[in-house]
Amino acid sequence: MVSGSLMAARAPAKRRIPAAARTRHAVRRATHRLSGARWVASPNFDARPDPADVSLLVVHAISLPPGRFGGPWIDRLFSNALDPEAHPYFREIRQLRVSSHLCIFRNGAIRQYVAFDRRAWHAGESVFEGRSRCNDFSIGIELEGCDERPFEARQYRSLAAVTRALMRAYPLITPSRIVGHSDIAPGRKTDPGPHFDWLRFHAELEAAA
Ligand SMILES: [Zn+2]
Image 1 (tube, helix red, strand yellow):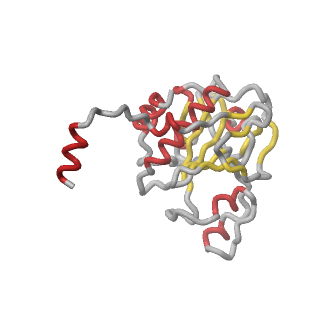
Image 2: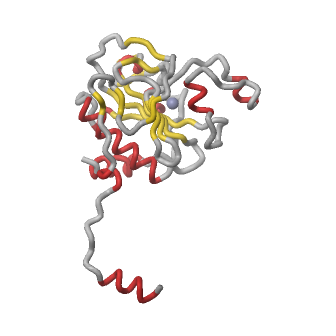
């Protein structure tokens, strides 16, 4: 073991390509869907007032039940198929009709629920730079996570790679127009929460360029 690691230390350094740069994603122009994401259709969307105005990215965090990861619950919430008997919390939120465009799970896997040219229902009452109704002009990305736990490295990598693809497809989205839900709905929302590392995310976004 020791000699192995010494040899490794002496070996010429291989250029390490950030995982984000190796992950290829692209938005398909015809469908406004992301390659490399599994499609699970949500009925919770409608038309954008101006389909050409896709100019903001909103990062969220979600866990169902709160603080727990895994299971089919996020897909089911966005499909209006959450079993209210499966957990007391699900009974509380049974009337919710919500969605996001994407969710990035703990293992970095990506799901898409709404095409990017449609309005997903993720931001609710919200304001960005004086403009309200952020759903009209934003793309919403949920990270499977909560206020109490750090996010996974694979989630940052996926998020950076996906964000790059979105910025290529929708050039009105720039690094300064990437916000957290708590930034556009302060006092009402805390996600993506204190553990979301914005500096790390922006560094990985640079590396993925
Ligand atoms: Zn949110």
